[in-house]
Length: 290
Image 1 (cartoon, rainbow, N blue to C red):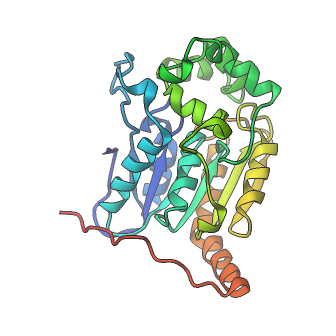
Image 2 (image 1 turned 90 degrees about the horizontal axis):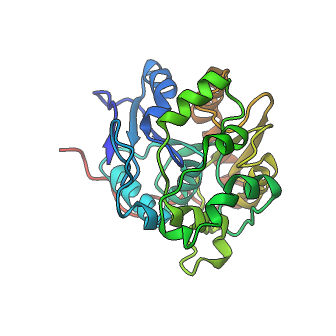
Image 3 (image 1 turned 180 degrees about the vertical axis):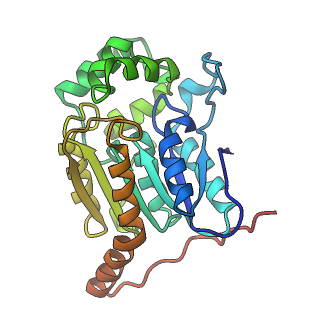
């Protein structure tokens, strides 16, 4: 369901997709930045997210799939009058890859993106962050939110203590099933997070903080290399995981804008020239807004 501000007129459209434990308010800085640049900004809220100050998880949240999230986002995109640019954070970065494989965006920027299948991402940092969650019986059927101590170390380590405390109070539980589909994609019978790289037909920029412990630079670089010629990877020194609001977010937003406005079209043209493959049109036409 689309929430947040949608500017009037027919300016360029950008969609901001939040990640695990989040809601659209994580994008406040980026929303204002891109609105000031003349974009109309849409900020969808993923399925079964509680609203306002409600922190009680929806009864169906625990079993919500990445495929459910992607289907809702596709429906939102189909309501627009043009294919959008998309910026996704964390799990939102993975969802952006899924949407790109469906031919639904012009170009994308992936901030601290979760990896796609078939890449395997079990390392000591991820194990430390999710150990208590994964030891719960049938965790893949339940909403989950790690403790503040765990999140402070593994997810909010790029923030000051004051900011980390404030951010944690705004976080909400996440789908255990979605977590399992990302962490154990090779065991998922539906292969929800699997991306077939030959289906990616738009440029993607992966931006990952050097100190990111939950979506490591090694995995992000591997993900970009798996996607191939349409993907670029850049390391962000001095940053960790919470890129939409860490100190220095303005430079990240500026880098995203530069890629979307200038570099993406050039990359697409270069790939087309080398491969001789014409750009695929979206699977279906967009329905004009009522």
